Amino acid sequence: MIIGVTGGIASGKSTVARAFAALGAPWVDADDVAREVVEPGEPALEEIAARYSRARVLNDDGTLNRRALREIVFADPAERRWLEAVTHPRIRARLTEHLARLQATGAPYVLLVSPLLFESGQNEMTDRTLVIDVPEALQIERTAARDDVDDAQARAIVAAQMPRAERLARADDVLDNGGSEALMQRRVAELDLHFRQLATQPAADRITHPRGAS
Image (cartoon, rainbow, N blue to C red; front, side, top):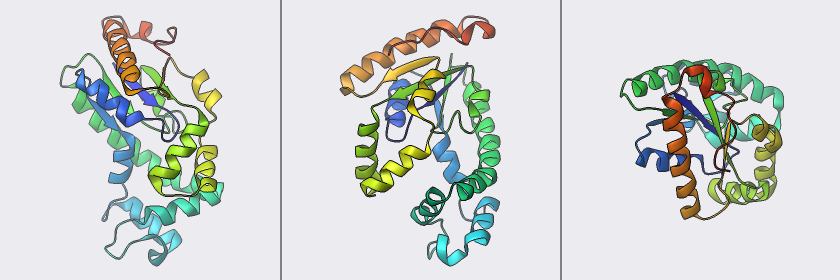
């Protein structure tokens, strides 16, 4: 069984995924795969450099200048759509390969962690979706501190994502990650048990269940 894990930026998706991993659930992070497909030598990076010029979006060592590219695409929705058209199909293909390897381990369920799970259509690759939820104000605060951007850019990043209400409406399960780490760990343990039980059921029964720990 594949569980799609998503949430707004700085909601703590990776932290939650590591808590699941400690309980025996392997995972792949779409952000890691997104970085793979724009490494030097990858076709996607060549397309990006050709569109915006190498001097503008590449570092001296030939790697992607992520900050420069982020400023471009968050300032212009059309450019963001272009970038997604270049990278998303490649990310999806590579995620399929990673997930197949994880499923081969025999774990009862595996996690696909993706900030754009719904927006990119990656939820179609999953049996069930879990949204990690935090208040928007906390997202903005964490994003500004983590990514060294100002408040306005942090707000623009949050605003560019799927609205919180829509993300929650599309979730099968929700984990509120606005509290303490101990509370998060307890909720992860509850959901782990829930997913293990679902994994023993027919595939058709794993979808659209009432939300779990929230």
